[in-house]
Image 1: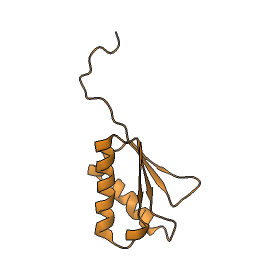
Image 2: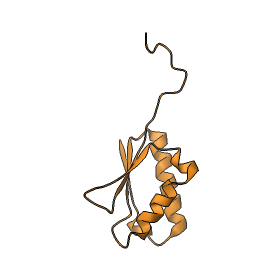
Image 3: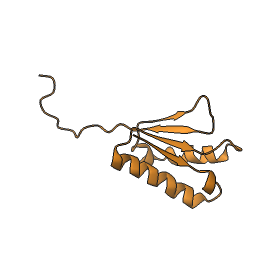
Image 4: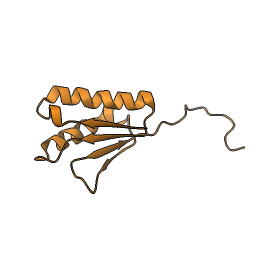
Amino acid sequence: MKLKLDLHDIFNKGNEIDRALRGVIDEAIQKKAAMVEIIPGKGSGALKKKVLRFLDQKEIKQLYHRVEKDGDNWGRLFVHFRHDAPTGRRGRGR
């Protein structure tokens, strides 16, 4: 499953951007989505930098596996998630 967040409509509303980013990350965790596609758009690059700063916050960074910048479209980012099984698994390695 892949989720998508297009920030074009709220590009100049800082608090709404943070809320939307946190919301889509929480949704990805809840639904065990493998990836979130975030579209900050091409513009000046300021919104993309804001998104990357948000994703780099310690409490947010621990929620996802990695961020990938789209090599073909620099106005798009992919946030990858790993939904590992709970610790204490039994029966492995027998």
